Length: 120
Image 1 (tube, rainbow, N blue to C red):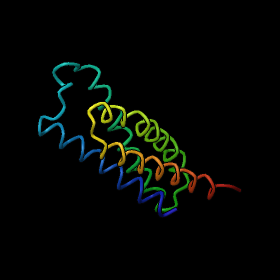
Image 2: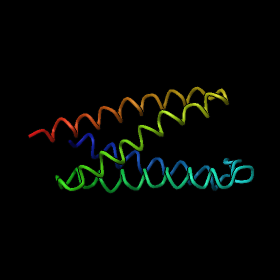
Image 3: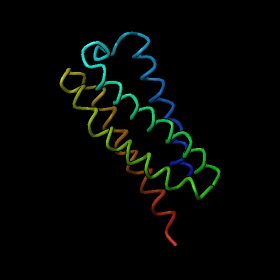
């Protein structure tokens, strides 16, 4: 389950870093055009990221109570990884689409690792 734990930590930190960079560098035009929508979107993204980091640490420490948190955070991540590529595809930024696809496959693999290892 080390893969799942480290995956959660790295992706969670990466999500927070990416959004912080985009916000600080002024690359989120929706702040002006759709402030409520982007605020809710950012809340969901940061909740997912924080959940991944916290539960990833718990999974690495073999704390069983963090397994369910990991599964919920991982489900939130899968949703985000399915929806987000559309934004970048619309912009023609195929590098991000490929990145999200690789992350989606990895997220599913990490969730399957946790599910399989929790069988009685």
